[in-house]
Image (cartoon, rainbow, N blue to C red; front, side):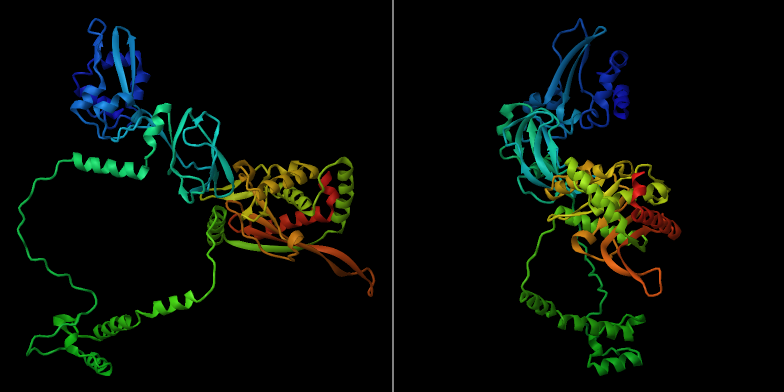
Length: 548
């Protein structure tokens, strides 16, 4: 409102504004809010307000623009296509409102100096909290198609999944800036143009954001008057002194002053002192001057070595595989985790004989009822969720001001696909039955393999389980924490082991599974991590307790 108060106080043509504000304050706020009129409201002739008894003709903004060109480069000819005219009688006052679409709805559209009609520039949306750029998988609409709110425009490959981008307003798709397969599009970068009128589509056939930006800058350069020429007096420009010593001959007849150590070093390397410029007082040559000279000469000799190394690399046979979005995000997040989170690891062996027996019994019931089979990983997810409910300190995350402890137990399950590593989330896993967890894990894993996960399928996890034991027979490993979480459980494979029996010469066989808990030491102390593993081991070795 700073612009509004300035105009009202200094403009004679806005003398009816106080009365207008009493009748329609909201209208005036829209005129001057946020800088939407930043290029117009600094001038006085925004609009003319006249009594009802005056002539019905209303002075338009076009007259103002004709006298005072607007900074955006609008002309009187194309202004009529980019303005909205509303005449509203209110309390004995008739005022004409012509508002530039480019300024009132700066995100919707604007008219440029090229004579383009009002349009909406659609930018690459941020479809996940960690997304900084995305790829266009394919467009579902073609140029010239009519679009309505809710219709899918295109499929965008985010850092974690392929997401459908919907249209927000009704109109026509005039121009696709980034076509199918476009890579590494920054969030906010223009990918398409829509217009309100179908006849305006043809005006965007040759539209290019870069071209429009450059033409706008050139128009500003042309509009600005050139500075008056100034008479300059030539002055000698002193040459800058280089940091490294130069080869300079001393004046004839002058004595060269150098330290004994510098003279000895120069003689050993056959360096003429006359080619060295001393950095000591009064040009005194010191040892450092000789060393700098030798170092600079060594650089000149060793310059061709990179070509030799390039030739060696060229002889190697290799293939450069471009980074996918999920690969780049996984790399940056895990690097950030390893560099900023103080990891420590706790490993325990759990006997899974009873767990296997219970799983067999439950799968017989599932097959009879037509349900999904329950895997060992489903039982691990359930046990981890119950242990988090029992030891809630591990269900937390670190912030600079506090430790946030979550009331919901949402377990991310690591899923490896051809496209990369995904971690879909099982929400409220502590409250769900084994059958529900099994069905949900299989459904989300299939969506991950099809690259069709939505943000709600992987966001909001509080703990992660990564299992390399079942599919890959990995005995034990240490996983990297998925920030902002504070713990991740790495599950190894189950193997038969020989264990002591009740007698001195008796031995038994049992199946044991190794699990390793990675903890953020800022949140989870060693004793707390050990307590969580104890609770987890209790659920695994006595699986009936998970059903209570």
